Amino acid sequence: MSSKVNAMQLFCLLLGLVLIADHATTALNLTDCFMSSSTEDLDLEKFSGIWWEVARQPSSSDFCTEVNITALNPATTTDNTTVLIATTYSNTVDYPWVNQTMNATLSVNKSELEYGFDFLYWNPPNYTPKTVFKVLAIDYTEYAFVCGYTNSSDNSTSFGILLSRDRTPNTTTLQSWQQNASALYPNFEVDGMTVITQDDTCYAAGANPSSVLSMLCFALSFIIFLELLISNVVE
Image (cartoon, rainbow, N blue to C red):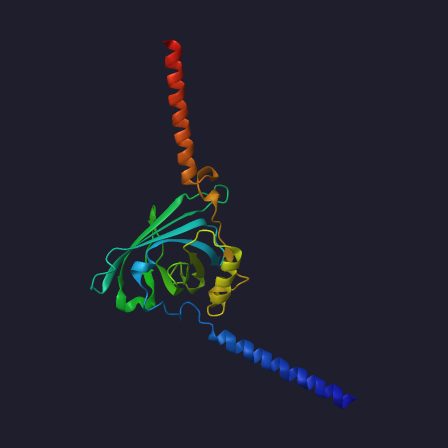
């Protein structure tokens, strides 16, 4: 009986060691952002346009984050491309509509895309510390996995964000992106990412621009109607 117990304990011990070794191997395969390379063949023209930040790790106090990227001369033969980055967001939970804007202008050398974007944001009235963006994976039409540092001289400021062309991707899609990213990069842990608020509350008074325009048109029409009514009564 004792020999059977010892055999079972030995089997469990060996199984545990195998599982630990497998987990360690997986962990070693996960490359942190400092060691990761940005996509070398990144197409800056396709990358341009509006992206929405839909999930982030670690969590942030910002909401409704929109990243608008513009490559000014992507089709030229020059090695350097001027890229404009405008990031708008809200930084207060009491008023979650967009109330902040940061801008950056940088020169991107196409032969050095693997190192990512290294730039300063102008966030009035000051510049932010030097920021780093690395585009780890992208399909241009739906998602982009981006890691980086809010302060390039401080590794503790690393982050991972999921950018989406769709402002509010469904839960299944978002979870699929998180799982795919988490299998390769430590800044994209499925249980560690925070979903970013992206809904109608991102606009003033909770209304989107089309709703605001409709309300203004209605108000103007009503005023004109009252003026016509009053003029008819006077006559």
